[in-house]
Length: 509
Ligand SMILES: [Zn+2]
Image (cartoon, rainbow, N blue to C red; front, side, top):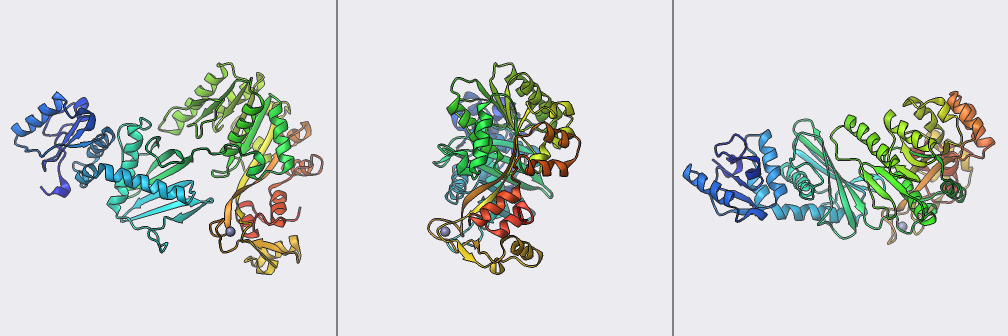
């Protein structure tokens, strides 16, 4: 049998009989390779099974030592295929592959990427990084051309990353190349990276999609809400919300809008200002350690149904744990919403996130998931409605000023820009300098924040959105996304193209 397609003799039901405990220690292949878990090198069972293989006519080579995660991955894969073509290579290059994963994370960190996307599909592999909110190919060489991986290499990288998570006990022991799986790598990471969250998805035709979220150490430390890009007024309003110890504060926005960071920043502010309070959080899983907050994880679950009820269970547990305030990572099910309101109605403040299009869309969204209107009409319960987006920030070192006609916008978009700024100048990204990457330096928040009163909630619960928007803006002084974006456009913090792309049509306040 060729080295490229050796049979795993010690698999369950294979020619050499084993039990689960033994399979955690050793793997023997038909081509003579023998892999032994590092911690079981002298184990009597291992020595016996190697002797048994010899008696059955399978000569073995000198043992190679690997870690438990790799062994388990091999067995898991062998359940799907009778043979695993590259199994020998995975094992032999065990540490070499781990070094490659490490190097991949290191390169992403150098570019300050938030995520790494690896897609193994058919006979191609794509490796992309999310930098400043947008995906870019991972550069291969010094000339910046995209990296080129063989399909097998892509598979090995995914499997090795999984094994690194399994090793740390944050993923199920078995790698399933055709299932949805998740895990976290928490050790052996490059400096500055606290953890890497992994999500594995199956892709048609035996493909694989792996997303690695890089969690940076020291994230958010010492940075205020104003640093994120909120206006001074919004920052003062958020401060007012955290002064009081009641009601719900809800942050909405799509994935990648920075709402988790804002939530975390609010919690840090509360920890600083209210050292005597009992603060709990329920997150799936906690993204960043927040000193001073007891962070309850929602356990590692496979599907959304389990996740929904586990979330509700964890919130109920937090409620029984003498909290003053509770941060709930996300309210997405009726059960979670029920407990969130229960907490708020029994004298606790609840800070949470929800998927909604804008600040005033939060109340209708709660109605959609079954929260009773009488609760949503109560301004002592519904304290703060925040929505946000993230826009790339123009680098102040190299941004350039142009006439709106040279703004790269055309047609209706240009007409809208001219209607808004007239002949006044607008700013575009420069060609890049020492202080930035491609003319952009970091990102900035565009936000809407409403502290509703009775009338606003009545209008929202009645479904009269337009009247609610008008009332909010004219009477309560609300600032919409468009208002905040225009303010940043005129200050040269963001460019017009991005506003049209991320926020919506340009419009005069
Ligand atoms: Zn620059």
